[in-house]
Length: 152
Image (cartoon, rainbow, N blue to C red; front, top):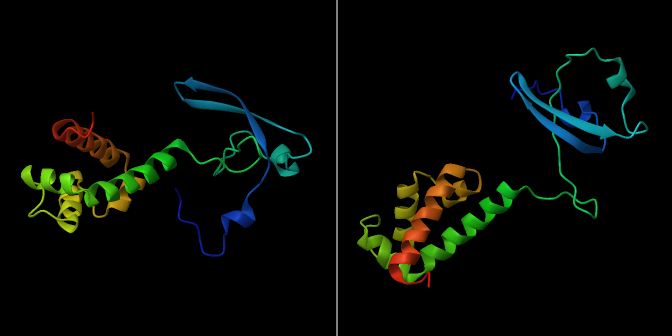
């Protein structure tokens, strides 16, 4: 991603149109995404731009009501943050994480601190965007559920 000068607002510079995905073809030189755009929606400038012209693209998937549909990664990230907060409030988790040596004592604050340290994140909110930490959190949570009997 390129840092843009302050006087170049991407929203003011962007072409906006609705498109339908027709295909996605993985090729050695890069993936080829084919979109169908209604001729009335296609900006005239795109007809005039040379082949090979580069664009910065942002796409938002629409649901069947034409509202933005959240990406799976966004939903999973929000769920993980909520789950981590709830888990750290759970007394049985607080005891378990202390017994595993991840927390200094039993308590919500220490459980949260131990969880963050074990996952290598600064804040539980990092689970929203850090897929690797989310995977590690899921594994840790699964271990807790299996070992504590909560998973039954």
